Amino acid sequence: DVKVTQSSRYLVKRTGEKVFLECVQDMDHENMFWYRQDPGLGLRLIYFSYDVKMKEKGDIPEGYSVSREKKERFSLILESASTNQTSMYLCASTSTLGVYNEQFFGPGTRLTVL
Amino acid sequence: QKEVEQNSGPLSVPEGAIASLNCTYSDRGSQSFFWYRQYSGKSPELIMFIYSNGDKEDGRFTAQLNKASQYVSLLIRDSQPSDSATYLCAVRGAAGNKLTFGGGTRVLVKP
Image 1: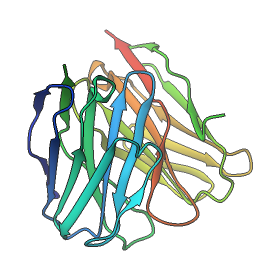
Image 2: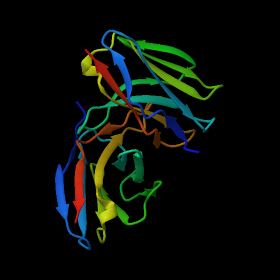
Image 3: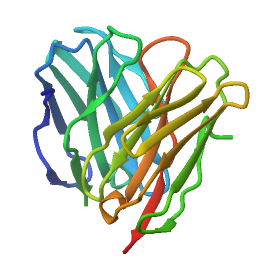
């Protein structure tokens, strides 16, 4: 079974703190994604990566950065957390191969910024 | 206009009835279409995918795709209380592996 894990289920941080969210997948997937999910807004793509050290901006990259030093690990960084970044953060991965590319999701990290 | 649109619901259906969920998309070059189910507090899980016009059936679920009308739907037959969840429609564009998600439709199945 594909497994995508995230470092924390719940996280509480203060405004201005630097926050690291880690995601690890064990299926040798090339592509990894970070989304945030907010009520009424659905899943919105923050950043994605299609290879080690490669990254591309998604729809809402402002205030975030990412790092992918190893194929299995994709980190989301909030350089200076703000209250409007309180949200559910979901990591996903998918293979490049195949006609369809199912994205497998991690359990999510619910981040609260006070 | 959102790229992928769904009615937010809630869609209330009695147990045993058919739940019909709709999704429209704006990118005519879209290649693949996915339905994810998300229980409250959990992450999305894939239940169906479709990439050819027509119907695709898997157990109690049927996905229907009409590329000319840019429309994809999900039917849930013999709805059960365990089907109560939010259903997310996702679309993969012409290039790359990004998915664009709709806002989700919340389904409530009442015993």
